[in-house]
Structure formats: C-alpha cells, structure tokens
Amino acid sequence: MPDTATQSQARERASRHGQSHLFRYWEELNPAEKDTLAEQVLSVDFEQLAALHRDLVVSHGSGPAADEGPITPLRAKPWDGFPIAERAAYANQGMRALREGKVAAFLVAGGQGTRLGHNGPKGIFDIGLPSRKSLFQLQAERILRLSRQAGKTIPWYIMTSEDNHAETTGFFKDRRFFGLSERDVFFFKQGEMAVVDDAGKVLLASKGRLSMGPNGNGGCFLALAKSGALDDMKRRGVEHVFFYGVDNALVRVCDPHFVGFALAEGHPAASKAVIKAQPEEKVGVLCLRGGKPSVLEYSEMTEEMIYAKGDDGRYRYDSANIATHMFTHAFLEKHAAAALPFHVAHKKIAHVDASGALANPDKPNAWKFELFMFDLFPLAGAMAGLLVSREEEFAPVKNKDGVDSPASARALLLDLHRKWAIAAGIGEDELRGKLVEISPLASYGGEGINTALIRSQLGNPIIHVS
Picture 1 (cartoon, helix red, strand yellow):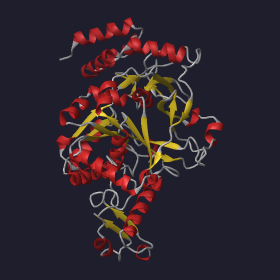
Picture 2 (cartoon, rainbow, N blue to C red):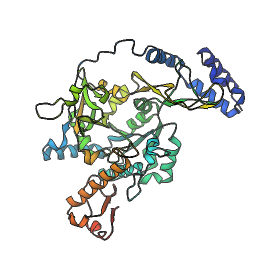
Picture 3 (cartoon, one colour):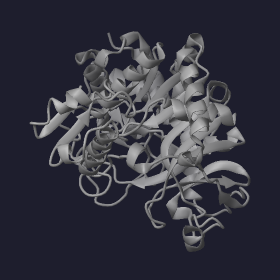
Picture 4 (tube, helix red, strand yellow):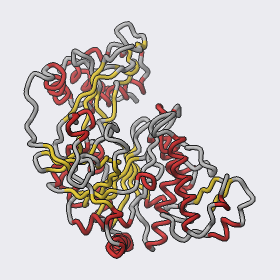
C-alpha cells in the first residue's frame, strides 16, 4: 500500500523549500515510484543545500580564502634509506599487529569504470593479466595470503556507492568472496548529495527520482561511522586502519612494513608516497599547511614550487600522494563525523527538463557539493610519510589508454613478478620472451617463490604460479 502520509509530508517539505517542481510528474508515477520519490525528498537536507548553493555558487569567489598559513613540504622518508635491520624491525612490528588482530583494511570502491570503457564497478575490471583476475580478486588474495601468514584474518571494509553496491556485492558472492569468510567482509554505501542547477533547484534524474551524486571522497569517513563499520572494528579490537583506493593494481594491502613504520612514528595518520615521475606530473603531493598535514594539488602549485630543490638535490615537493594511508582507529572514531568543508564542482548532468524530456547538456549545467578527504588530515596534527618504489607499489588504472591505463598497470605488475622470479634464482635468459605472473596466494611481496614450479613451465610462453 502506498504510504500517503509520507508522500504528503514530502510534498509539503518540498514546497516549503521552493522545490515543488520535484513533483511536477507526480500523476504519471506508479505507487512504488511515488514512494521512492517521497523517501528521497525526505532524505535531503534542503537547509544545508540552500546554504551551500548560496555560499559556494552564488557568492563563489566573492570573499577571501581562509588563511591556512604557509605551505611547506612534507617530505616522505625513503624506505630504501632505512638500514636493513630497521626495515626488518618495522616488518616485525607490523606483522605482530596483524597477528594480534589490530589492523583492518578499508577500501574505497564506489567508482565506476566509465573512463576505462567498462560498464560496471571499477573493482571488477580485468586489466588483462594471463590469469584474468579482477582488481578485487588481486586485493582479496593479498589479504588472504597475509592473513594466513599472520595466522589471523584481516577484516575488510568496502565502501561502495548507490550505483555499484548491488553489482559489487553480487560479484563477491558469485565468487565466494575469493576464499575469504563472508563474515569478515563488511560492505557499506557512500553518502549522496542532491545535485542542483544554477538557481539552486534540485534536478530530476527521471520523473520519479532525484539527481543524486556521491558526496566526495571525504564522505568515506562519515560513511564509515554511520554504517557501523567503525563500531564493528572496535568490537574486533582493531586499532589501526589501512586505507586505499580500488584502482591501484599493485597496492600492498595492509603491508606489514608500512603498518610497522606507522606504529613506530606514532602519529594518528601516515601516508605512502612515490617520487613524482617528473616535476610537472599532475599529482597531489604531501605538504604542511600552517604546520598541519595536507595534500597540495598540482593546480595549487606555483612554478617556483614545482621546480624548487632542497640541499640534497631532491625536489622539495616530490612526495606524490598515492591514496594509501594509515589511520588510528581512535583518530577516526573522534573525527569521522567532523564538519569538513564542502567544495563545489560544475558538471554536465543529464536530467529531465520542464517538458518531461531527458536533456543531455553540452556544457556544465549542474552543481555538485563534495567533501575532500584531505580536509581531515589537519585534524591529525602530524602525519608520517613513507616513500616507496613506484615500480613495486603504484600501478593506477585510471585511463583507457596510455599513462595510468590497464596496459601500463599490467606491464608494471608482470615486470615486477619477473623480477621476483629472477631474485629467487631463475636466470634472466630462462625467462626471455615469457610472461610471468605470480598469484598473490603464492607470494605477497616476492617471498617464498617456488622456483621449481616456475621451471616446470619454462616451455610455455606464459608462466603462471598459483
């Protein structure tokens, strides 16, 4: 039965906030569509939306930016600069935390693979490895391998979006969670914000549905709290949270070296970084704003910053952010619901126009309000940075072709696995002209390579150690 009281309440609320147009096609909707529209309208904070439109669209650029203090580099410490004994100590400390169940993995996986020409969640994308494994499977198997090494299951918290939640969860269920226990994988959705036009009117995605968009990567922390994931972590005894994005084919999930480094540094947050490929590379870099940790976007950098060098010959702003972080649970518990500032983006958004037709604009027509995760960093007070090898740990899958594409990520992964095989004792001549892929279930980071199994496949053009 239709919930007429809810529908009436929604119509009255929309009218009160100058959004009556949302019910323009009410009589064309079936009962289920009416319920959906009413529920959506009641979920929107129209007061907040109006304030954001006023401050970020109508008054955009009319006032001075907040003075956050001077910007200085936050230079990550090179992993290969530590003595071997110190690296081993970090790894042991990290593995001890894993054995004690104090570490959880937090994956942000709300994105779609549209830019890759892929119709679906980016995590289910196959970058073309001989094994045909998806990004999700590569990450799941690294977690499984590390869990077995630690003798303790690493819980995995996965943030999806409204657009890809059902397909993502179905993908995991169909593949039996890649060997992980279903009870140790926690899915939850990112929050959404209504999209408005230049006049602050909410757009309709269809006659019975509002146009909604993800509330930005900074919304991941609020979703972590609202979903109960943070409470679940606390119940399990988790003290440290490894955060990463879905599109890095080489990400070392819950890397014991990084975990141990972060614990030893003792700050609420830590970040991995790689050296910029060249000074002009369009990536954000770790920095301090007024002495507090942050990320400086490429668009914010002056030419002087881009080319400035330190006494050691390194570029001063060379620690490129790779969206791999560690946070203490206590820090997230305290600040996950912090009132971060909203940012605005002008986008081309398809919508139902006043005539009832679906309009596909050829120029930006809508405003999206988003939270940025880097706005949480200053609340940490201090943050450690660890500089790691790009060739070993960073193979982003963002573009269909060229740089940061499936092809480049695949090449980086296969080249790394070839190096593992050679380091384990296989001659370079033996591998000439062959592709080498080593399953994460066989080796997390190059350890324990089965050379006998590799040699047994030398007659094949593709060597796959599983």
